[in-house]
Length: 578
Image (cartoon, rainbow, N blue to C red):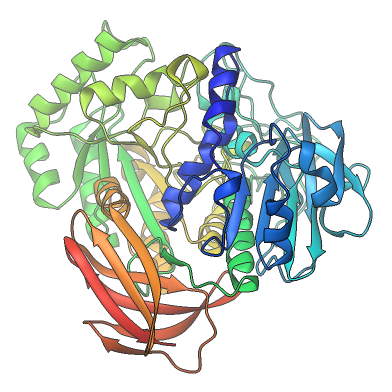
């Protein structure tokens, strides 16, 4: 539903219009959609989403549209649509947790209560409760059936929840440390975790099979034992729950709506390894090259100012197929190593010179340094950095899905910039230096979590530890083999960036055809090995026209028809018999 008027009013009042983030969620799915007014809801619209509270009650035609088989999804206070939804908004919930019920709507559910930022408790009768607020068991998501149609209402503020978990709050001071001593983030250094939303008390768990944490824990290296970690990608789960409600809704309406799988066909999830050149010691760099060669992984090699390797080592890094990236340093250990645009610009030029790389597209901030909320992304845009991988942990007790994500996404700007999306992909970081900075037991939890939501598992290593600490070197090689065993290919940040931007240039559509379904993809650039998914009944899909193959697959607990094809730039067409 077109919410431009509500967005304009929010901005005029100096308030964030969190609901604009719906577009980013849909863009990542590559699911076809358009913005319309209520009066435009007709037979060619199967699912209608109000991303924020409706301003006025639409005409009576909307209720008839639902009764005739339409699927209406409301997010937030249903307001004037309360009677249609069968629920009204009660008390607000600034911060809470939500437990998902067992229902056909959710084909795949998280194993924990999900963190929510903002929302309302829903009250009503004759509705099915799909999720409840954990603290008092009141309804958080409901479903009302009206003749042939349904109204699904999210009391959870989905959009604020996703953005806040992924981007946190503005970093202006040290964050509060974990009470158990496992994450002393109050270290006098401003960094990403200082603004994080997820809770040390509510959103962590011990790695499976590890003994309970001792009452007194000393944060030393290597970790004396396993510690609680952020084991679930909460923001990704919220995105996928919303997607599941769309897929379920289109199936209820009998509509065939395509979406583009996150990775090439047959790839369940992706692994990413990065390396930070801290200290710039020649022996450390060579040890890293050797370790990555044995692991058979091409990494994103983040170069830190000041100093540098020899020209020969930089050439060896490039020759091995590693990506040269910036490791922006704002730790105060050099004249240019402070937080600021001129300093980052100068360090970027330094990295270009020493690596002989004209266009550096990736960055990770040294020590996960961060200040403010999103100003840093404007610096990236100005430099041409297209993907940033700074947002992650620096302490043993905050490893894992610290910012609730394994999927890449475009961050949202504050109201002062119109809540636009920055042209910089966020690639989350999950742990550093297994068997030194992170306990070895976190490895499989991170791989499992990324696979469960089909995202990216990101592991960081440092040359000094690969050179001086045999357990960390061994953990790196074992990690590489384990990801491959699971079918997770190792991609550099540049490859992830290129793939995501290419797939976002694909516009999908489906129309009925005498032989089944006519599928069309308009692409701005080629996407080889793409997988188009359709949630339609199938007895054995066949591609009748066009180059490609079809099969049924199960994704997130739901069966889809998967069309695999090399999408070329321009117009692509197929006919499928489901």
